[in-house]
Image (cartoon, rainbow, N blue to C red; front, side):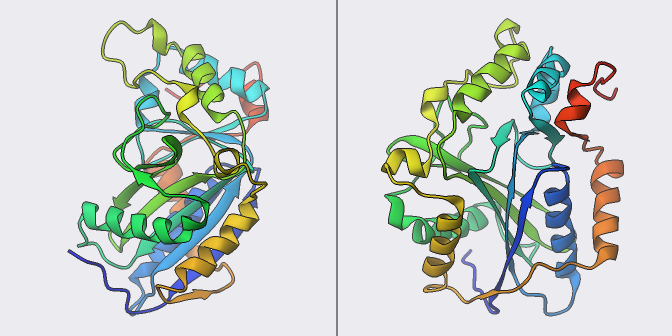
Length: 280
């Protein structure tokens, strides 16, 4: 099943977040809800979070998760449980996050992954040949990892809502020790101590890289944003517009994620507090 884009993508950049790691996910959720409007256009939403651990559902099975989150909170990491993807991803100011939203609930999972893979191949081609497929040993490893020179620089996850389809991804742009962070996180959380039914495979930090580190170029997140837009608009219709979503949709989305899906979200200060505990 191929994807035909009949209207220009609305290219929206909502900036850099620091105060609540759930907030950009609320924005994605609200944008997806906006797709219910008749004649809604597809959206590409870009954002950055500095800095946080974005946990997956599988991480909840770790025996010392609370201890690990407290430790990383003391190191300045916020934390949130997200609704897509399987395991923890570290975000910082050198990681670009992108969501592709389509007003279509019937598109197949493989078709959507294939379409966004094409977007990335075109948009990131300036930095080398992208390879798609699981990078064994990387954090949040999956079939739709993407890599350069065998090193993972990002991954993708998608889900459906009543009004559309959303695929979320992150791109490691600037060099940071993200692989080492995840080795330390899972060691602190007790992954190595689990004898069976481990929710996460072995993490090898050396399997993870970044565009800047792998190309040897001083590439920034802003550089990649500009390169993505310039390259993508050569192949697909794209219209940069200011970020906007109705307040009512933001409020509904905040309630849906926090209350219905029970996605917890904590700042580093909250995690480091002596009386903090994970919710039951």
